[in-house]
Length: 130
Image (cartoon, rainbow, N blue to C red; front, top):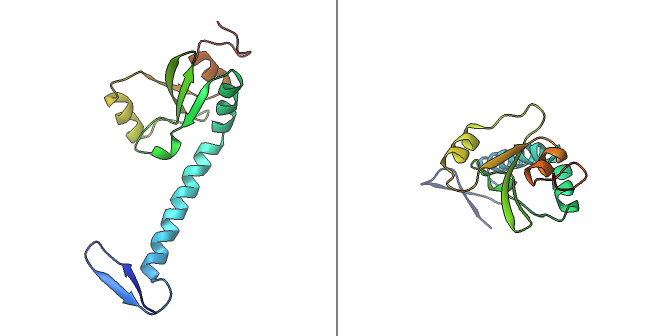
């Protein structure tokens, strides 16, 4: 059995059974990038999503979209919000700066805690209207 693995955009490399070294290296890079991306999201992302859901908000994670797209699309009381989740000292990436600047819709809120996420919806830390 022969396997064909692309080594560049134009040429193919034919090998005996087993993945090519180029393919293995590429897969390792992809998995490392996915792991790094997932690690960035895990810190406060889940707590913020949980707080939003507790007050009845619909939450759709957009974090895997990449290319500067905000992390969360939130719906609450017939309004939509775009939220970028950052850690305590986190800064926008260059892609995020461009996305936020070029977006023609609502302003993207940057939040660092569940309390800040609730403030975006006009709620206090207990989920009551401010």
